[in-house]
Amino acid sequence: MSNWQLPEGIDELTGDEAIAFESTRRNLLDLYQSWGYSIVVPPMIEYSDTLVLNSKSIDDKTFKFLDSSSARMLGVHSDITPQIARIDSKHAEPNSISRYCYINAILQTKADDFYASRSPIQAGAELYGYKGTDADIEVIVLMLSSLKLLNIRNITLSLGNTAIFNALCASANLESKEITALRDIFRRKSVPDLESFLI
Image 1 (cartoon, helix red, strand yellow):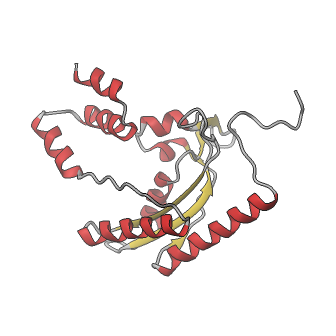
Image 2 (cartoon, rainbow, N blue to C red):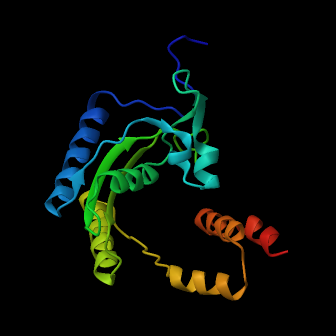
Image 3 (tube, rainbow, N blue to C red):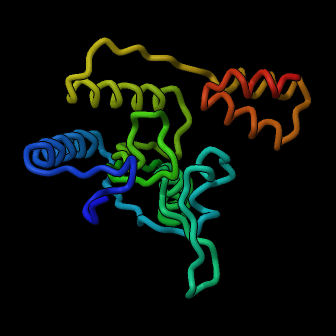
């Protein structure tokens, strides 16, 4: 085994691939900024409790280690979305609408599937402080514009309404822990876990 070998599922870009990636990254960030989204660069490492936000799937994918300075658990970000929630909570004016965008490498303990990377690039544009239908439409149109910019065609868009999910959970008198588990199952689209949950 060569000392220069990378760990399984960890990738690097060089030459033309690196140039193409950087060009695409710039084009996407320019698109997001043209829509009023502010670029943020979250830290690679944070306290693990703020990184996972009670999500078992994120927790399972997060590398964690003990910080010798604070004696608290730290984590390497495996998903940037919880960090954006923290940034918004810390920096946004109360009752304001905030738009954030980012493109950053993340690190995961395990890949989503056999051929996937454990160090994928995550791009996102997130809108906080406005829950109207216009906000949903804005984010969806921006996502479709992003895919068009990437020359991705033949898109299938699947939309869900969380109000239906919430109403069904309420009618079934599910506890908070059960609702969290069920959300995670639906997010992962795990039929075996859903069958086990329903038994």
